[in-house]
Length: 421
Length: 147
Image 1 (tube, each protein chain N blue to C red):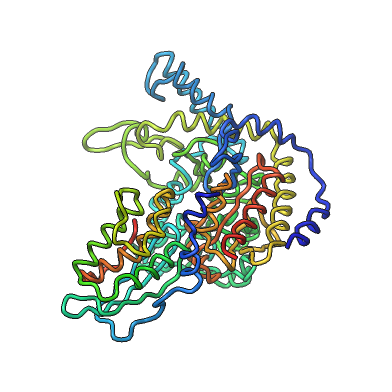
Image 2: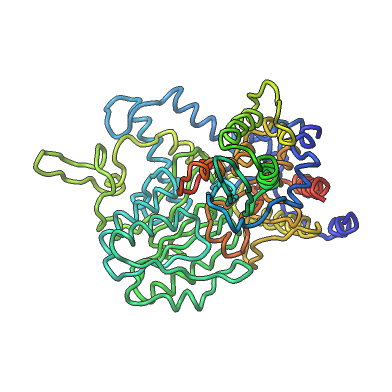
């Protein structure tokens, strides 16, 4: 066992350029001890930590600019509106969307998907129609479609995956047919880390005139996203998985699609004129943003994206690829550890089970070592069923994680073996 | 590390590895399912209740060491007890694992779960089988959830 670990240490993973020590100083929460041990935060697929720049942006907004947006002529309202709309442009550039009005602010990826299911889905999906998803979706990209199918008498079709956790492309293609009205697919699986060939999936769907929604909740913090290069019709992500605040996120939609869609919720801000007989809806993006929005959420997310841009997504991607390979090698070298999800194209996640210990026990023992991982079904119960495990332990990475932290994780997992034999 | 050893006492590790009464009870007249959606733990408790007394009990399922050992020790501890006694033990056990117990009197082997109170996220694991048991005694057909 010890021998295996030493062997792994000699494997050379060249370290790409990223000043992690400096980056870690930007995240105040990382500098604490848990149960007397330095915190090792490896639960980034659940939520990420926030850099000081994000915390400061939110504090500054509430300290100096707080007012409602799109309403007042007074200075504070103008400042708040400007900051809120600047975040929209930042998000537009982040996704390389053509226009800022294609960026709809929502509560998170989940609400983005629900918005499309309600607004687009109800208009376009009827009895006997089909919606195609994959076997590796998060519950948030399953349940809204199930609800829609139930309401409309439509059918949910699921494209299967292989034992490595990769989508079976030919089977996916075979599911697409004239009854298919929408494809909804995750860019990166939260439980397995698989990166789906989204560009190809969209191409195959578009060849049959089927629009595609991409759940980018896990992809946004790890990949460079270009919705136009992907030709995605809808793309959603959450701010809090992107080093920004919770309760906020983005739905990108192609303008023509969004314009043809009915509003999602009714209320203030989404209207141009209201009488008791008739309401004229506001233009994009406001048509989909009823009520006073999460203004500080937008501002915080904008600051997070700016921060990411400052670090550089290319550097992040190459650093994380190295760290993932290192983490995979370290964990795979421990006897009794089995990694779930071994796709060739993978990012950010090492899900594993141990023959001697249940994931929940792994999580408790690691917590005693100051190591935060996720244990359970990761809101993807069908994946657990597919792999025949009740749950997994999942270490998920961010660019502020280090090889030393992976070493601590490996040591913690060895401790689990010690306790459980 | 002393905390960890308090939680994973030898008896718990032993019952996790070799759970007792881990089988379907063929002549059961009460059953109930327990489910912890947080971690996916599932347990099915079988009971044979006659004349207000638990004549026999067993369990099946999958789960973490705490939930499995808890179910196992539970089945050992309750055989032959009246329904009222079982409910009383459950109450004391619940007090024990949530840290409310003054003294763990009469709990016998169940005291090995006293360390659980230091790990609030694991209380649900320790009580899952007990909740199912309680539902079975009330003949409640709905699966119980820890949520």
